[in-house]
Length: 239
Image 1: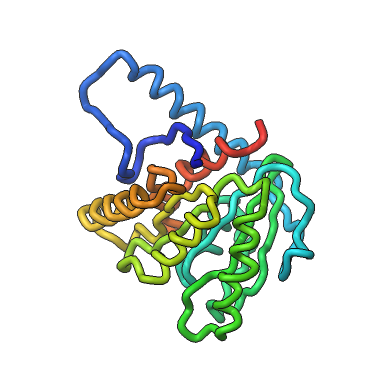
Image 2: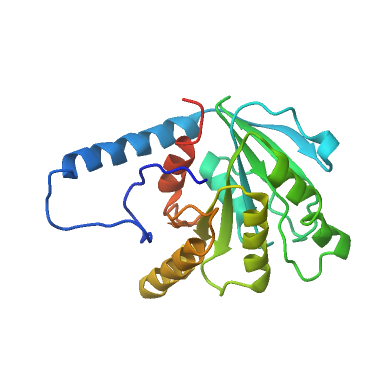
């Protein structure tokens, strides 16, 4: 099931209780937050390099250290988020033809964590065989990869959750793989609307046994939430 790690404060995240009143655990909580942020900073300051692309199970790299996969609808901002996380402008290519990527792309992060860029799903003009990949190669990878620690499921904070998103949530449940919801493009959402979106995503997570309870709001444009996401991923990396 999902792993839990301390998260820094910042944009609203359902599942985190923030109190204005001092209490005994405040100093310890602050130290945990600072340690998590620093761990994330150090991890993502390391070299990130492309390892391999796989269009079939027989092309997957041999299982090694922990892996975290990034999944989401086409145009959700997945490539931009990966680039923002790693501080590299062209690590993941931002495609001009959404829904056309048909492979799993593996990136080694400092020898401590493998980032897996999964094909986007749900693009209306994508060929049917591309959509079918999510029911074939993608499901087989999710279900059978022993080193996969978590899937970061990206949802666009600007728009409503689509039926295809809920279908993928069910697929993740069936694959019995831990996943966590990450909201993207929060810079385009007003604070009140963002708070509602975070709570909506948290309710969605609570309805799925494989889901991590924390929802992480992010923006690749402004950098909001990027440090929080780095900290979460550092908790899954080799120490």
